[in-house]
Length: 95
Image 1 (tube, rainbow, N blue to C red):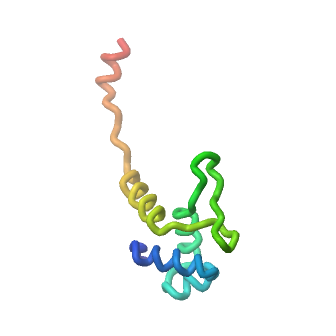
Image 2: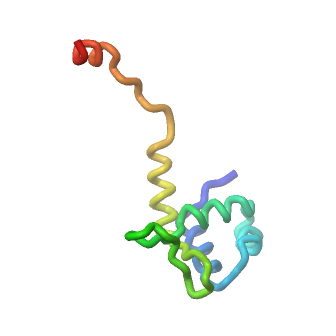
C-alpha cells in the first residue's frame, strides 16, 4: 500500500477532467478503485455558500488535486490518540 502524492492527485484530476472512469484511472495509476473513489470524494469541490458539489464540464462532481492534498494533510495531522484532559485541574476548577 502506498500513499498518493500530489503528482498522483494531479494525474487523477487530469484524467477525471478528460472524462475517464474511476476504473480506468485506477488501472493507469496501479491503485485500487476504492482509493480512486475515496480520493475523488476527498478532493471534491463544493460551493461555499450551500455546501453543494460543484459540477465540472462533464456534469460530474469537480475534483481538485490541491484540495485533495490539503484535506489529506489536515486529516493526517488530526489522526491519532487525543491527549487526556487534566483530571486534577478540572477538580480544582469545579470545586
